[in-house]
Image 1 (cartoon, helix red, strand yellow):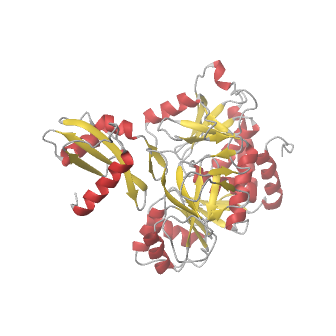
Image 2 (spheres, rainbow, N blue to C red):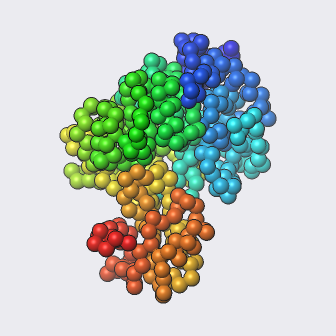
Image 3 (cartoon, rainbow, N blue to C red):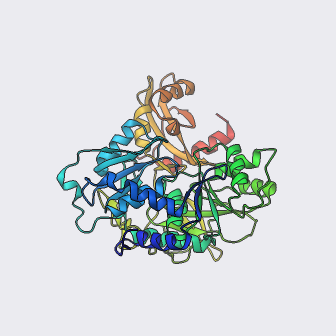
Length: 471
């Protein structure tokens, strides 16, 4: 083995796990068959390290591997070459991928399409690798408060701290088996599945199959003890019949979108297990968690701060919070925003109500629409809607969705419009996840007395209209 590294807390933690858990199963497939032991992850990492020899230290290397078993070994290899991984989801269009790689100045992209690893090298300007100090150890992709791609700079110690806070707060350890269906490249999956494997020896089931029936069968076949999911999984599970026995499953976690009281109650009634709400953000990792077994669900409740997380808030009304912990990222990249992230603190874009019981999410502070963790800029959708013949003006806003957090609605004014025609136009110009849930046709789009559009007020009017006269 290589000498023990001292300047990367993730590699140091991995060294300890390797010594304690080397021969133990680390990654399984959905049938329960072993794909990697911890030692085998290390061996594969050493084999592929040479693939990155000619990439200058400090360069960004994007990683796009789906929910495959090769994530840990690729990350270890990159860190040993002092490179900066940028995890990317596999469901990106060619245009989206090109924009991200260009904006972040990635020197290479690692992919495998479920086959051999391929390193696609890219030309980058010389100044792209000038970090103004030590290079970060990881970048997390986020749109922040806009839809433009940007990343968050993390040092290894911050990622280790986040995993420690999550594992301690949720009582997860090396005796557990995580079922990995949420995307590994997203912050939720990366922090809850990949990093705990490397730093706490928590074994993982790697699966690309997101069909609810296949997930339940996989949970039964593998004997997984922990299932980190999203509200839509728990809703789909609760609607199914012919359920398999899941005697090993002890902990169900929901994050990524608000968990409704109705969905949680349906799941508990059918499976006899509580769904524990988890609230976090890409910028700071885990924030709060409902660790109790209280099955009296409340809308918006997301538990109490995780160990090591401090929450500050002015006043007693719902409003923004400040999150401080050892897991908070350093800054946005390529452009910093110190008012939101920096100096060990982060201000999420959520309205939070704090009580003696814990934290409640009550809404968003911005107009950006949060669709199952993906940020949608309404201005971009408005531009496409206004290209539809007959549309004079369009305003897009988000409305609550039980399983996706929010969904977009387009309010349009024009001549001779039909909602179906506008939706058909949208289907030709927008990705499926960007499609408006509905088109609300009005004579004139209302404005404030100062001539401005209040999207939140417009959303409230739409919901009242839809309740009175379903569209």
